[in-house]
Image (cartoon, rainbow, N blue to C red; front, side, top):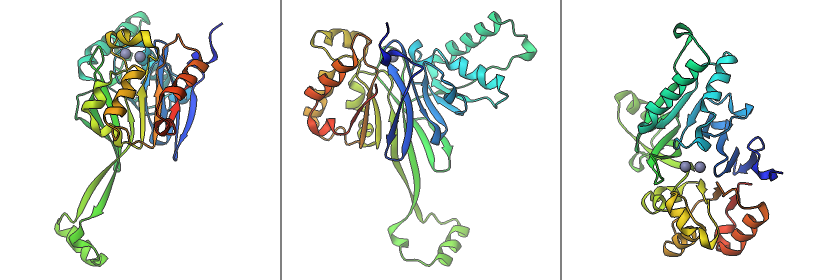
Length: 290
Ligand SMILES: [Zn+2]
Ligand SMILES: [Zn+2]
């Protein structure tokens, strides 16, 4: 019988300092992460019904365990008369996803005049998507075996420039009318989602360590799996330990969610291994997605 934590229909719900996130991620099976308060999701390796209302899906990379249910999400929304969602994908994968959608159209014998292509949008590292006036997602490059993006959601706030502190509201209103830029924009990293990745991403994309919440993959834990981790473009526990030893300030996150464990491990093995090997200070901020 399959282990209970191998059922993609049974996600884990985490309360992370005000954000409620529902997610599932086991290597090769499925990965998805739903953030209903922000009306978005990351990856769609499975599509539980609570994912359907979310208007934006940020796809990390094209491996099936992360994308197999993208078109299910799209077709359920159509069936329920909902407006199309937007699917953000790495630019190099756009054609492939479109061909997949066309293959389904053909298999289901949907007529041309009845068919609307799914709303895929290609993204490249550095691209920004505004979810609303105070929330932006920024894509960054991730090292894996095929084109892959990570995403950081930022709360964007305006802050008075120091030279305008104490100025009366009427004056500020006048300056606003005159088009004077008296405010700075603050980008506060709220949540970063990295799909499958080697540790190299964390050495290069240093901003991820500042994010309040960080989703990280940790596929392999055992001593004899180091080569496999490297070959398959994944992170090994030793890599993570080495990172925090070499750069103690690398991960300053309030919450670190570790996910995408290999199917070979049972739950107790994962929990015990992490507890015994990760530094205590880090472990206190770690959530194990099981
Ligand atoms: Zn994966
Ligand atoms: Zn992958």
